Image 1 (cartoon, rainbow over the protein chains, first blue to last red):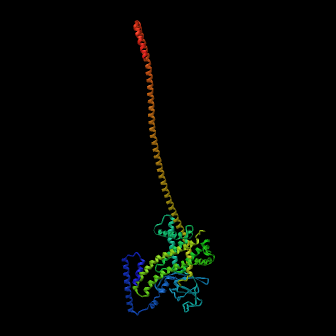
Image 2 (tube, chains in turn yellow, purple; image 1 turned 90 degrees about the vertical axis):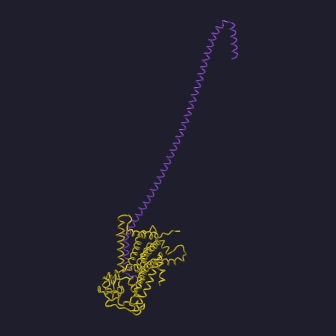
Image 3 (cartoon, one colour; image 1 turned 30 degrees about the vertical axis):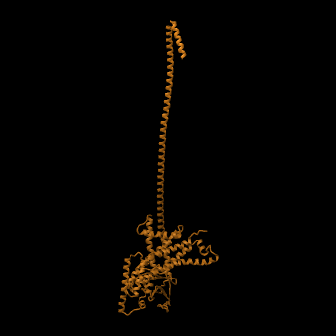
Length: 382
Length: 164
């Protein structure tokens, strides 16, 4: 294993000197030599535990899903009743009625045991899905596949952990750009200093490297608000998602679906005659090919933003899963020594995620700009 | 909560929050920032253009100056040349005139000398003639007293006249 690891590390850090790589090799060698000792020590103390048994005690999948999923409260640390959680408002819409209460009323229960009574209706939190018990039902009942039998899902418009994190991004963006940079620009037109200069450079980066080359000088201004907002929203949210205990907003499919839809709608509504002609009746090809191409291109209208949506979701979620898996390894193997390997690895992936956070924001924005640019492009008529 | 099933609630919030954020940012952040940046870029471009213009003007001015200098120098040279030529001409003219005058003076002098000489000669001749006549008269008066001598004299005079 040691032999396999070294090339990976070396290839990741191409400029690393021989001395540094030697130090790191030694580190891993020691870590891997010591870690089995811990295992053996434990094996002597207790009966040999199979990997499956260990996994049952600590369910890594549940842990990971819990961390990357949405929740009705913002959980920071602790277990059960002693956990420290920021309660968030639960907003439900059912039978023409709006029901609201704080998530703390569930008392950290996500197994559907604790029933909250509100306005004569009974609600339970089952794996962070809120169910409304049917009239007269006292406890929730399940079928063989653990699906509730006597409960239904109301419309859930709660301020969940992800929504709260989203608000945080909004506040940060308004602070950074409206209160910070824009106020500077209202006062004078000189180049700003310090943090405002960083922000302005980023704004100009979006304008000069994303909007201008993809959309062109004539029409880019119209799309700048969307591109800038989406870029900074995704980036800041990505970065916030890397903080411990933070929400996984951009790694949530609902969020990326919404963002992708924005791109699609902007693309569709701003598409000019040429664009639709090239999409549904491509000139310059045999007539019998045209309908086939129309289907392909028409599907492309949906697939392009769908690809954006899946890329962002998958990249961010994957990054979180890798980090959580590496940390989870310590608990699965019940071996503190493995931390010597998995913590540096998790750190390395986290640093990589810092890059991915920017990269995904950049890719989402530049592809959005590209699609919009394709839709508004003026074709030269031959 | 399923990983790949979009939650309606979150989708709703994301859409609403994003729309509001986009409009707020467009109005209170992006527009002022982009406008100000564009103004600044415009002013930088203008400044650069005017600097370039100034540089060109300077160059023009410099070349104008050089042209002027060149012209001035050429004019000076021309004036000098002209002056030199004039001087030469004046000198030549003067010397020629002087020569002519001198020649004329000389010629006049010669002529007057000639005239003087001639008149002097004529007077001399007259004087000589008068003198000769007087002498002759005297001689004749004296000599005519002697016949022999008269003959001799006549002979001699005839002889002289023949020689002339």
